[in-house]
Amino acid sequence: MPPTITLDAAASPEAKRHLDAMLRALQDALRKPPVWSEVRDDVDRAFAAYDGYIAHVVSVHPMSCAEGCTACCYDNPRGVTGVELQRVHDWILSRPGAGSTMMRFAQLAAQRGDPARWRARGIPCPLLKDGRCSAYVARPVACRAFVALTPAAWCSPGDPQHAERVNPHLDPPLVLVQALRVLSERLGMVNADNLHSGMSRLG
Image (cartoon, rainbow, N blue to C red; front, side, top):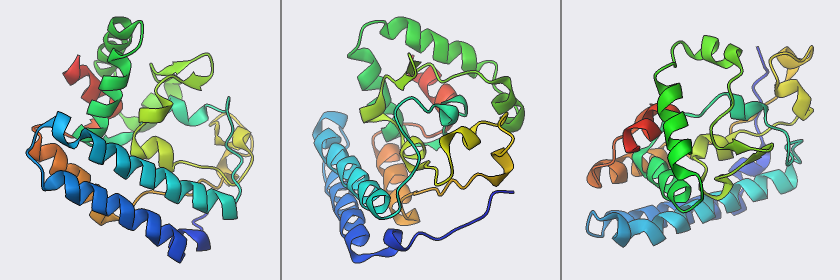
């Protein structure tokens, strides 16, 4: 079992400043009419603040994650809110090949089962193109939060050092996750167990 560690920077005043900004942006969205076009800018501000939090933590605790390491892209995020799904969906629709990407999500959603068995199948996320996330800017919280202190190669289940990997999860505090869920529900956007099932509903 990978060790559990605490990153001091995640509890620093600077980290709190970014997380407070995320909360304020989501609260602004919750005060507006429940229409996606009305709240989209606030949601974007919230995710920008969250990225600022992650960037701060990583600046103090350097991670091994880098462009081209894709082990986490074979285990699609679980517990995705409706707002996150909508952001990914909007991104996909703004790019060529949207139809085929959405069809692939639907195909894989029908095949998902036990998470451990799914991970062992080694099927990449439909958004992974040429070793890069094609929706990186719009990726869900679970994708943003997953980082590695140990060598990136250890994240792969087939690596001999996989059991020794250290993957801190820089998830936002529960109050922020709850705000995303409540906002999703107000907008009539259904939360999903995983990215595949959620995207297949939007297809």
